[in-house]
Image 1 (cartoon, one colour):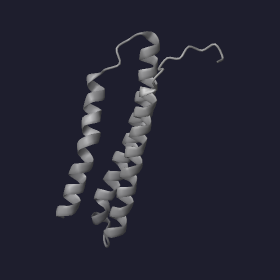
Image 2: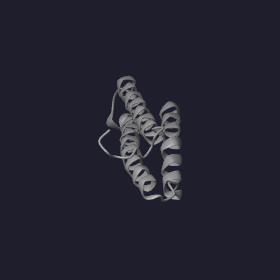
Image 3: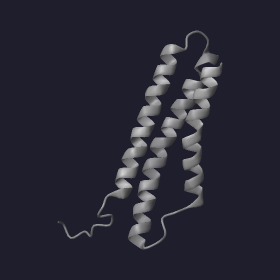
Image 4: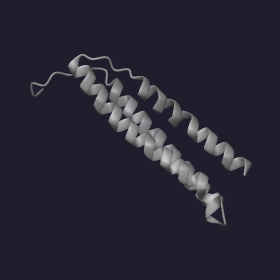
Length: 105
């Protein structure tokens, strides 16, 4: 080892980041499927574009949260934040709402 201390010996924050990346990839794949199945006008592709935005949000959230958690653990600060919980809730609920709207329209 190069003299650096292991900050997260179990790799929980890294596994969480990878999980969010997989979620973003799955959402992007679902958006591609929506584009493929929705024909016609641009208005029919709005759910697909929204799903892509949520997928991009998952990627951003994963990388930012990973860096913040590692910095907090390194500095001995608490890692939880109400703002992160709210973003997590939004990123969890939005795909379901978008999919429901897409199916109903």
